[in-house]
Length: 100
Length: 93
Image 1 (cartoon, chains in turn yellow, red):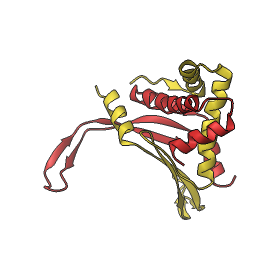
Image 2 (cartoon, one colour):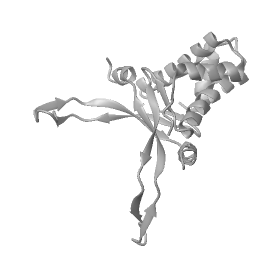
Image 3 (cartoon, chains in turn blue, red):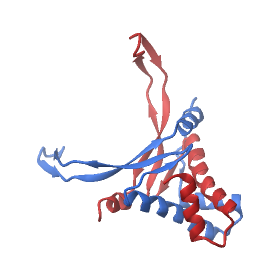
Image 4 (spheres, chains in turn blue, green):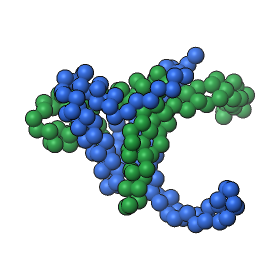
């Protein structure tokens, strides 16, 4: 499998190509979309993008962890984690595209 | 928040853009991410998170109804790992 990595720049380039906005403005819009999604999640909302997937947050309670190297016990504080559940369509496309 | 609400918010922030262009922008971003993963690539969005493809090995599964063993082929699944900045923000840091 080719290990190519895309970044914000590639997404901005796609917006520039598809919509015809300047590269600069395209980059700002990519940033704006990521910020909107982040803000909604931080505010406790989940973000559901049809045919892409759903971002949602979950509360994890405190537990005792262990440093795997030293075996030392360390408290893990309660925290909020983000999970992404991909849509069936995305799962199908990723499975089909990577099939040998 | 759903896709149409996201489009609405971006449109409000960018009153100089046509609504249909905002739709195209938002759709292009998600399409580009999906397409990259379908090609086996990674999409790394610093501060937000990274989308990648994980390989699930071939295994022997079971039909939950009949209990028969069935061969499940190797497959690839999408995966998202939250970025450090967003993880910290979710926890009020």
